[in-house]
Amino acid sequence: MAGKAFQMTKSERAFDIFLYVFLTLVMIVTLYPFLNVLAISLNESTDTVRGGIYIWPRAFTLENYERIFSYTGLIQGFKISLLRTISGTLLGLISASMLAFTLSRPEFRARKFVSVFLALTMYFSGGMVPMYILMRDMNLIGTFWIYILPGAVSAFNVFIIRSFMDGLPFALQESAKLDGANDFKIFYKIILPLCKPVLATIALFLAVGQWNEWFTTYLYNGNKAHLTTLQYELMKVLATTNQGSGMVNANDMAQQMAQISPESIKMAITIVVTVPILVVYPFLQKYFVGGMTLGAVKA
Figure (cartoon, rainbow, N blue to C red):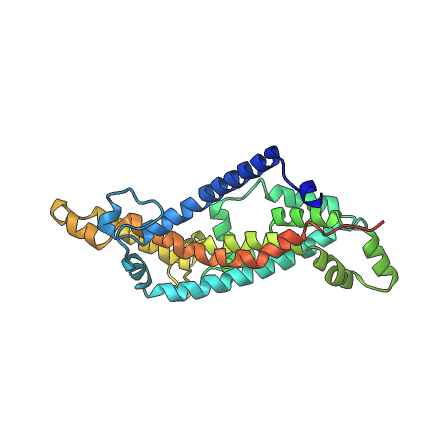
């Protein structure tokens, strides 16, 4: 009798089959672009121009990656990009969370003025020329701090963290204050541990933005070899490849394409800049899942 009670009906079994098929299709659609890029990056140049490569390379080779990593500035660029990502993420988290905590306090009288001031920065900007003049006057051009300080505070991140903090029970802060805790201790011991999910999300936004950004290097530190970034160096590799492929005549076209293909280089560069960020996701995933259970208050 117990076995019959747990038997699935035909409609339930059909729904499960439909669900498995649907999720499998979603997984295929999600993974296909990445697998296609990986396959083209691992394919020979002469074979790539023929097209028709999907999720598996027809002529496997590592020449595209060898071409990329043969550039001397790549190692230095990787070091600066890694240091920039770590420093920028940490500083961005600290500044955004502290400002969000201040704005979430009801006794802070200037909270409305500061909130409006931050919101205006999301819609209005002085432009590139005033920004360049400001960075020059602050003596940040030609330094590592040009990557960190201008983006230390993001209004969008502040508002996201503040919204999460507003959803936390204020009784936790009141009880801690009655026990003698000051504002810093409340922020460090109570608020930050409860804000791990939103902090992990903002950290991912900041890390991806810092890792993929190259225009700052181009604009301010393009002539500083010791301050170059990985993305800027890869951009130069891609530009050099495109120029090389466009300057050959008809007689040299076959030899040029046999050596290198801009399409293959593009895909190899995409893999190089994507894999480090993909490695970070598993470490942050647990905080996303944990955020579903935070904030629950027992009756």
